[in-house]
Image (spheres, rainbow, N blue to C red):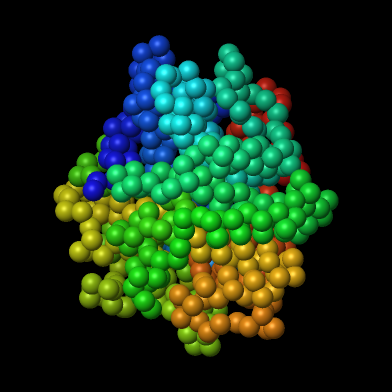
Length: 514
C-alpha cells in the first residue's frame, strides 16, 4: 500500500512555503486563515507541512548541519574537493565566530519548524473533529516541536521558547534557561505519550509518530539531563534528573513498546536497514519522509544522501566523509571484534558496491589521507531507485534520513543501567546491539562505561550523535582538545550574531562568546 504521508508531501509542502525572514514569521498556510483552518483535512495538511519541513527546507541537512553536528566531532572530515565550501572547515578547528553564516541558517530553519508546529497547536483545537484524532494531531505537532527544541538545546543551550504564536508578531523575546528549555521539551513529550496512539500506523501512514515515539525521545532527553554533571557550568544534572529516571523510561519502551532491532537479513541486516525497503521499519522511531520527482520541487526531496554520497560519481557531493581517526579505529575494531558495521558503513574508492559497480569519482578529497571514502549508509542501489528522468542529483534525494532508532534506545538503556549499578542489565541491552553487528558478547564482569560509549560511536556513526555524545559524556576536551575545542566555551555554539543584531535588545549572546 502507498505511503500517504510521503504522497501528501507532494502537495502539503507546496502550500506551506519556508519563511525567509528571521525572527518574524508569516503564516504558512496557503489559504487565508478564515478559509483554511476548517476541517480535519486542513489539520492533516498543516501537520504534513511540519513533517515535510525536514526536507522542504534544505538547511535541515546541508553543510549547515553536517558541520556543527558531525564534522565538529571525530567521526567525519569535510570531504569533497579542496576549496569546495571550505568555510565549513571552521567546524574542524573551531575557528567559527558568532557571525558565521551557517549558524544563522540553522537558527532560521529550526524556528521556521517551530512556527509551523505552533500554527497547528494554535488553530487545530478550534476545528470540529473527532477528539481522539485531534489529540493525535496535536501530539504529533508537539513531538516535532520537542524534537526541534531538543536539537537546539544541544546546539545552543539557552534558546527562545515560543509556546504558541506571539500576539502582534512579538517574536523578539528573551532566551529561556537550559533547565526551562528541557522542561518545555518534556511537557510536549508528556502530552504526546498520553494522547497519541500506542499502536503502529498502517502502511498508508508509515512515518507518523506514536506515543512510543514520544516516550523513546523522552528517554534520550532525560539522558542528556542526567549527563549535565559532565558539561553544565555548575556540574549538576539538568532539572535534577537522574539515571534512575532514564532507566524507568527505557524499561517502558523496551518492555512495552512497539520497536525491535531489524535482523531479517542475518549478518547483512545492518546494511539492509538503511536501504529504501526498510524505511519506517520496526526499528525506526523517527525519520524524515523523502520522495523523488523528475522536477526540482513538488516533493520533499532530502539533501541527506545527496550531500554525503560519492563526489563526482553517481550524483553526490561527498561531504562529511569518514575521518582518518574513525577509519583507523573501526578497522582495528573489525579485526579484533568482527564488527560487520565497518564494511556496511564505510565505502572506499575502488570498492565494489552491492550492485557490482566500482566506486570512482574524485581521487583527492579534503581532510583525509589515503583513499577517498564515504558514508555507505546513504547509498541507494540502482535496482531500488525510482525510475525518473531529471537532473543528475535527483537520483539521490529519495532516501529518508534515520533520525532515531531503537538501537539508540538500547544503548541509552545500557548506559542508564550501568550508571545505576545494574551492570548485568546493561550488558543485556548492549549485547543485543553487538550481536547484530557480529561482535562477541561482553560479560557484565568485563563491561565498562567506555565500552558503551564506544558502541554508540560505531552503531550511530554519521547519524549526528557522536559530537554531542563527546560533549555530553565529558570526553570532548580530551578527544577534540588538540583541534582547539575548549571547555566551557565550546560546550554550546554561539547565538547567530545576525539574530542578536535583529533583536531590539532581549536576545543576548551565549556565555564565552560575547
